[in-house]
Length: 608
Image 1 (cartoon, helix red, strand yellow):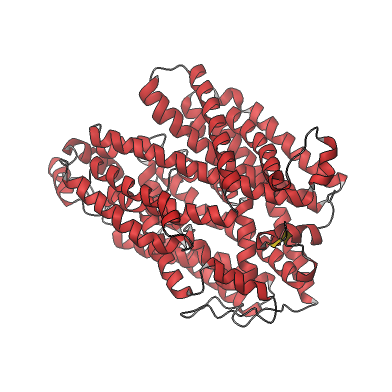
Image 2 (image 1 turned 90 degrees about the horizontal axis):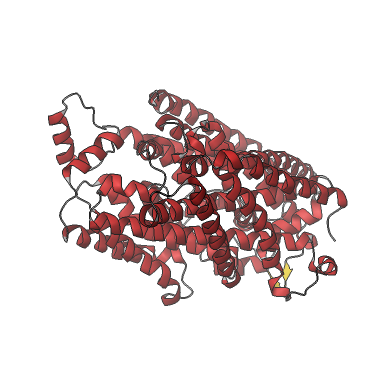
């Protein structure tokens, strides 16, 4: 066994605390649907922000980020734009306020506030529920795969098998570990709902913050006595048409990894990421745990503050750890065990570095934190997906008058079924990066066209939304087989074109949304965009109405915010690398952009 008794005790203590929190909040969560799914809208923005940041500090993502920093150096700071990570800035500046003003429980329920209750709205509601469930299953499988591969290194099956009354094929050992950890996440999520998720996230973030600082300091001390052997351009965030990193004389296998990733034409890759990322961000949050945290906030102001706090809470601490492990791995590459079942696997950089360089005691703390990171993401996703099944299927179509006891039972059943299906998907996925690419480039890509138009174009209706989503989902689920071997990101323009055609054809095949619904939506949410006819009617009825004329200000703040967020990512990396001047420049950018945002964003937030 590769961990000590002290480390194992720390991990078990953490797991016990999750059970305690689930039991502690069980009675509160049972009071109502709102208490279970949204925490009763009682939690302050900084708690939700910390919880949201903690949910994004997931184990599979951390494994991936350490790997890409190891390979691509500072240029890896741009690759998370695949998600896109800067969607938090769009949420911070305006989108969270728009969404929170709707006062709904889920994104699917929001559909009725925008499209009404006609047949197009009913179909739109159904397609959002389907999308949310598919997205939830993808995220659950993504976390399931990552945690199993991770824990296998520290608790080898050879040691554990002597205590287990059955045998498992070597290839399914990670899945076995994933199932065990999943059970703990399911327990506290199903019992305590959003409240237990948020409080468990607070514990998880505290563990990770301590571990991140210690790992970063260990890496800085190691680097002070040595030098990194990396290719030219590794230290620079700038790039040309092609990625010029050449590992052939250092670690030749890395060049093959870069080729297989499909990032060699880095400028094309970057522009595609930016193009897709802006559209995804303008579409608003996907129906996952991020959206549920926004809907759980007390007010539109607190929703904006919550989204704004995520980058500040998450980026410096997370990248302090990521850079620390990447540096330790590069300094001691010859000591890492990256061979898994006879093949080189760069996703093993993080777990192998932990095994080699983290001392006893801290190892238990770090492993508990990373396992907590898995359970945080898993629990938040599960809670969000349950919300759609219970609120948008069961209560809407099957039993609208169900008592709380019945709702609680359906919540439990929905959660268990979702977990079982995600485990099956996890058995068929190749690796973490494989399912990550499918989620961020396939599923997120299918979501874009219909969800951009729903916010910014008054004529867009439920029929257009439904056909736009259908025309996006079908390519998202089939392009991987049609364009085998091509990076999902590069098929996004074709997917977008098909979805846009579906949006416009569907829109003009049906009449506009009822004007009373559009006016109510516009008065409540107050979006900017192509709302001229509706705005004119609202002002005619209420001359004192102040429409949204903040397009220019919001987009200016988005640009400043993306610069601010990028600097928050880059400065801890340069700090770990002991690069004084770049660290100072990055910190200066953070300070200057923070001052600008204080005047142009924070001071302009609504009072409530």
